[in-house]
Length: 294
Image (cartoon, rainbow, N blue to C red; front, side, top):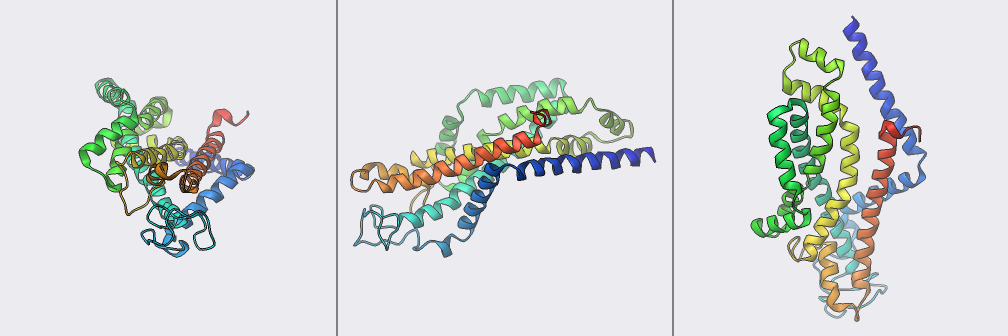
């Protein structure tokens, strides 16, 4: 009976914590604006073929490197392709890379960090050395090396960015699990015969959920920037598929003829990264108990 009551109290605390965080987010107008903007990006990415006025590969050879007009609202590129349409299709790439690459990074980071923090000793030492080795390389340079090995393409971008971005997640989860494993409910789970991996899955990782949410929100814009950087260097998304970084790279050679070619993809990239960063800050403030009274 006492064990059931403890579980009920933990469930109430868990529900109350996220309810309070949700109420705090609702009062933050800037966070709501960022959520609305990100939701709009998702709609644009999902319904790109319907929303885009032209196909991303359609070439209007009579209007090459033209500025904004009634037909092409943001102008055309060096092949007469509609810039607005390519920005819309590029939204798909940016969001997909942000979500998929971060999912890979979080999966690796949570598993490695939880194992290091829970088992300690030799396991912690080995995983910590691996983290230090990966963290010793600048992430973008590491991603470039991986892309040289794997080759270009959006699928390889997923793995390259996800594979180099897990160390920061692992470090945070490791430190949090080290603190959590000293709690009484973990000792009770061990005393009742709980298997280590079950304790990690049922008690460690769920109690790190708020931290994981904040990490994901903060790292997605970094992944979007990595993808744009790789595509800018010609190692990411390849034509005829569109990417904001690829568009900015190509537009450098035509700045004097049509400056809007580089400006509008740049604005889309900046606004997207800014929205995720501001939302991440708001989530951190709402989900970090140490900041509740600030």
